[in-house]
Image (tube, rainbow, N blue to C red):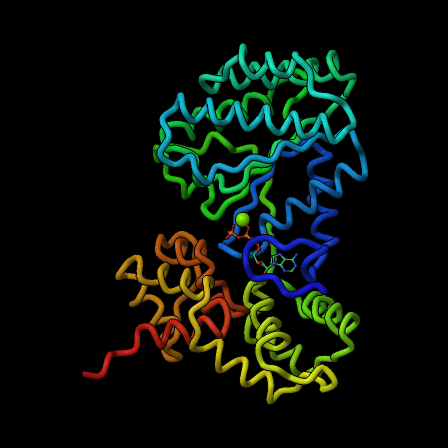
Length: 365
Ligand SMILES: Nc1ncnc2c1ncn2[C@@H]1O[C@H](COP(=O)(O)OP(=O)(O)OP(=O)(O)O)[C@@H](O)[C@H]1O
Ligand SMILES: [Mg+2]
């Protein structure tokens, strides 16, 4: 039986899933058009799950697309040489996987690519990419379109980021056949926020992709999978309230569903009603889960955050939304605040609002 997942990316055979079909279609179309895409969104919004689904859908649709999926999470403290040697190793590993997936056997040629032609810097990286399509054609009779996807891009070392992005830009703007055909950079901090040398971003070719929270329809679709499998329905008021309380934040939605279906011992013959939801809600306002821990760590990062958040929550003195304000910008990046319908700052959802007010409430002696 599947369940609602809250520990990292979710898998369709183990978890109930929001397929995000339309968003995936949009993403795939951009890849096919050879765009260089950036996908920046706060923690636990489903970035990794999303591009993994997209890469799979893309190769199922057309085998020519050859995704190479890397992750820079552990690279932060590497020097330039170690960064590129790890990059090279992971690149070769992904090539090997891709070759095997296409029913071919990795050969001496790939071994040689791994041992002989080293990537030591951004220029040699560009050379390898330039020759990669020919290489795969010559040795494996593949005519691939390389799709480079880098997760946790913010882990890129400071000393590397500028040259690395310049090289990608060079590839994108060159008249030659583009390899990688498409690049996706995924992370929490945008390129401007990486703050590498305060100069203008060399990645001015980027196509921004916004990954939205779950809509009411998507939440209904998610919960219906439980109902179809187990026979237990959710009252429609529960679904609407769950959407309002979480504003569709993917982790919070799943955590609510997990409490309601696994932890409250509601007989499976009973419909999940508002009284059950209120118990789950109470728990959510008190418990420590990874998402709330992130939230509280983030809002305590800088003393100026408290003042600003308190102003946002006070009804008399709201705060106009502008990303030009450094503090607002940073809190948006962490997923703590968003632009409200009235163009004022708003806390991202009522659950966060409650937890923030509780965290900053004056302590009684
Ligand atoms: N398509 C989906 N369907 C259902 N739930 C999802 C989906 N995508 C994400 N989630 C929920 O969001 C959580 C985080 O997913 P994921 O690890 O993909 O996000 P992320 O943005 O990559 O997180 P991080 O920034 O921590 O790496 C999952 O554990 C699950 O609760
Ligand atoms: Mg992730």
